[in-house]
Length: 163
Image (cartoon, rainbow, N blue to C red; front, top):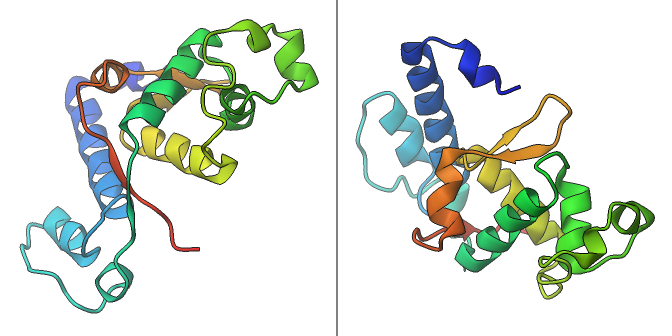
């Protein structure tokens, strides 16, 4: 069950606004201080002192990978967590994947070129941006925000974490 349905409309709207603010901070490619202060109504230029100002992260055009990830969530029944989904996307025929028949679905192995760490980062980003939600069992489910990403109609640029 989606816990968002238990909220009043104004509470749901406020919760989405807080999630959007957090996503802007975590997924910022530029200065991290800007989205933080913007949350409190303050507008500034780049600070020149945060981690991103001192060493800007590389950016990844994750549109195609997001489509693959969201499709895998859908095709596996919207009930599994990141590890099983990464196994499916990378074509790892684990006992769980084979037992569920996921080695025969269209998304099996489509993301073999993307390292597992990047897939996990992508699933976190999709959760933060609201394209995915967590089920009561801890798996991922699509939200309405996933629709433009699934269709490839929206860009999806992500900063790559520093190693």
